[in-house]
Image (cartoon, rainbow, N blue to C red; front, side, top):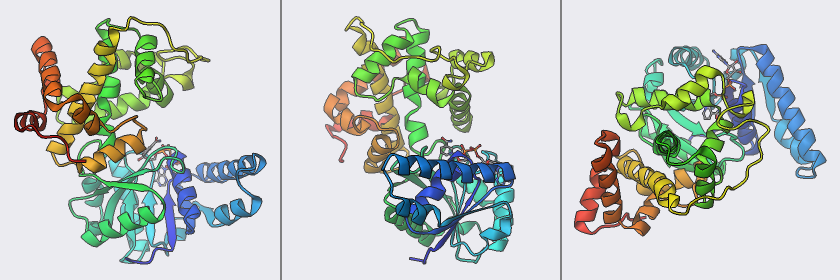
Length: 386
Ligand SMILES: NC(=O)c1ccc[n+]([C@@H]2O[C@H](COP(=O)([O-])OP(=O)(O)OC[C@H]3O[C@@H](n4cnc5c(N)ncnc54)[C@H](O)[C@@H]3O)[C@@H](O)[C@H]2O)c1
């Protein structure tokens, strides 16, 4: 494995700040670069405030905090990144801008430096294609907040050299992350498999089966930390709608990923969720479980879980990742109570097939098509090997 000492983080926003902290905690010297000096200053101030808060709470000693954050320097001069062994880019989600930054940085650093992107929705292969040497470009998709979320999706581009994949994987393990390997396809693992958590919930609401409070209550009682409406309000409807739309477009408008009019209307109205004071809920909002007709469990929890299972199974079918990595991604990346393939095994594969087919028979939309892998497994009496 190549020696990785200095890490450059490009982009001093939410993700850049978190990733810099993770790299420094793992003992690396880190430089945080941003084109915007206000962002550089803001990142430094945010780190200092974090240190003050953690020391005051007694969670870190001053020595620990100094040892970690003393390793981080902040800059708006790109050449300060020149002697880095690993570059992690976390700038604005725009292909042209990312390609331009990679093209600038590849001439500064050594030939063996790994160039990683934290993109959530762009093709790593397309980003790599902006480089003279695309074989050292790889996706390292961290989750927010990066220091707390264990998962990192490692996404090789079509062009990535196997040694780069190997070294990036080993490094993420050294950093204490749960690293899963995902094919460079839209949404990678988490942002693909999780789509029905939002989409199916909104659909159930649009059909008038239950209101957001009830659906959220049922999902929380079904083991999810937050209900879908609570969660999308928290993420922000602008952000969630954009991810949904980009996954839908990237899948050539496959109906399964189609965004909803309900969420578009929220965005159009400026009801972006918690950050704007209103979304599905009006803020401040106290989360309370509401009483509901228990027959709704089947129409809400089982239906959403079923569509999540179908999506996870389809990701296995298309070789997006191994079953084990898909389970890890959904339990560590978005804290699902149980792996979806394990849930499929528990429910019974044939039962899953029958339930998806029943939805298809009712709606006649390709959104409700059963993944071929479930059908094959049911026919052969197989379970997912986890
Ligand atoms: N926020 C999340 O939950 C999340 C999670 C995973 C991945 N991501 C991805 O991480 C990346 C960054 O997201 P974020 O939420 O931290 O964004 P952000 O808006 O908080 O920060 C982006 C930063 O990039 C800087 N920037 C823009 N153009 C630049 C350039 N040419 N050179 C240097 N710096 C530049 C901006 O000044 C800004 O400080 C995106 O690709 C996003 O899709 C975000």
